[in-house]
Image (tube, rainbow over all chains, first blue to last red; front, side, top):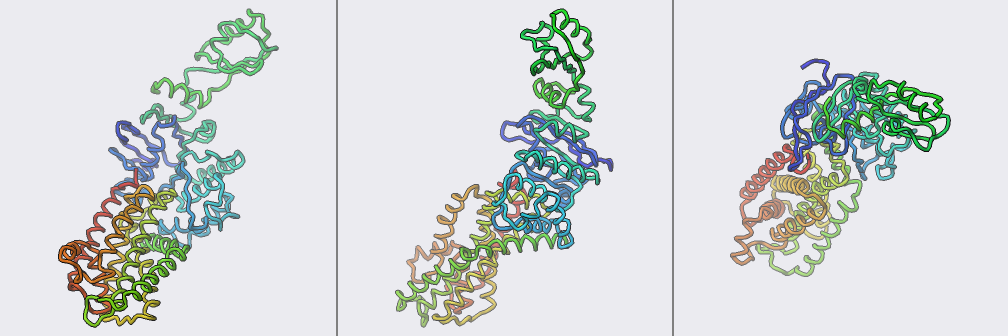
Length: 307
Length: 254
């Protein structure tokens, strides 16, 4: 195995009854990368993450975290990975500070780790709540506690399963700033999110899953470039009640006098301009809009075509 | 050293958990058991203990101590595990590098500490009006430790199996409670009809109570060595089964 691989997944399968949650998934995630794992609900993302972190037993295949098998060498593998689960948890008996210290203790880390725990509490805006119990916290704060718990042993790989679900924008930005900081220090980050703009902005590599299989695995840029459509934003002088057939067929989005057209790559923009002119409309601006990860995601998860 | 610290942390957590609600986990069983002693001891003061020269309330006190230890050790590990499942925080433990044997052992330690605290509190308060001679201190310690370990292990297994509080309550009410009440806490098996005597031989709790009573009073229905062998065998069996299931992730790793 290469020393540059953080996660190595080989022919991983997991079924629940007749439903194949993971079907022969093989994947390598480079060390130090910011990796997005995307897919519609039920695609197998959380199952894959569960197997990585040891919460789910796979039926077949193997997973290694920095060379350590998650089954045969689980103790070493779990010391290297931190998971922020999607589901919130509760703990009525202990304060947040106690909970973090206990979690560090499970990893064999004693008082020497306490300054790092204090840092986490401060970085995640939990310092004022350190003596409170989980039941007293809001959903967003509980989510931050989960992040602190995942980082308490300073893992080399951090897996975030929908970390910003239910978190307000200000908090989300602060959270990403912190995660970027960890990434800059060399931590490998694996992210699943329904906010595809986040994945596009943060992640260098993307895997898209559907029905337990990998549909696409590529760098974010290459994935965007491989999208079969290009988008053109057309601004008309006034909003038109009816559009020429060519524009109507290519219409992707419309907002007042602004139209976003989805065109096959290579279609001449001159054809658009002349169609507008022939319809007696006045064109004030035409510019290319880059395909977003959401556009790519929609096409892939609808058609099921492989890239 | 790291693994040792992890295990110690979980032991500490398990003890701190029940101590944070000590009115419910220590004082309430203390009071209810002392009420048993007061009522049964007074009402049946002149009753037959089944052993020559032994007053009924003297016979009763070690039984009640053991009953409290059995039930509280079981409650500690089972309720801690089911609560962790229900609150979702069991995942925090499952994400850690702690081995199945370490997790199991730490839950058992928590159960042992609570069982002993409750049992000995009852013994200390009870001995204020009932003589507690402690005839064989080593047997007393052996059966105290072994019984609370067995019940901690059984509680862990029940907590592992139960998917909701209702199932655990059913196990507690339909398995633990009858086995406890039919274990010779309140009577000597020698006073039972032959059929019930024979049925008692199949109740593992009987040997725990009988061995413990031998440690305090020096009298027992069967040899303490037999009780020791059966209780130890039960503990080993429970440990092997539970650690195997835990290693496989039965009911906890999806």
